[in-house]
Image (cartoon, one colour):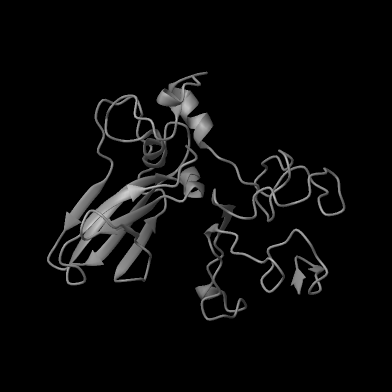
Length: 235
């Protein structure tokens, strides 16, 4: 198969996530490319995706570790991020976790996990630090309500702001009918639709676009529904 002008024969490569190759796996991009009708030459329905890796991607740190090897002749990825911070990641974009720099704006040089940890809520406003980051809410605020729920006669919608750089942390809405068992709401599955409006909330104080993410479901699909915003955490 040809990738960017380089031909890879089945079974001839290592350190790869190529479909059909031994050990192949979903790279867990922020958004997968989709040719729509299956033909990339008909561009009207092409979705080129977002090739940033989410934090659980199996492609992270799976490349070679030596700068200047035959497979890695540049020191930066296509977004300008440094490639060689330990073993490189597979793919066009090196994974970068924006949370540490974000939380440091509010608690400079703090290392106590009870204050700067992702699951901590030092202000007691009801949002963990990582959810404050996702929704661009100050972790210093005494109260916070970035999540909105709207109902009409046909559907229920759950909306939240999401920083552009937070997409790599893979935030998602999960739902339950009994407050015990929760499942992720997936676009096109079980009646859910997910709409992302690019930079609908403008730009953050540190210059990052803030999208609006809306998860909707028909009122007829479920008679009782509870929802909450969730995000995988390193803590």
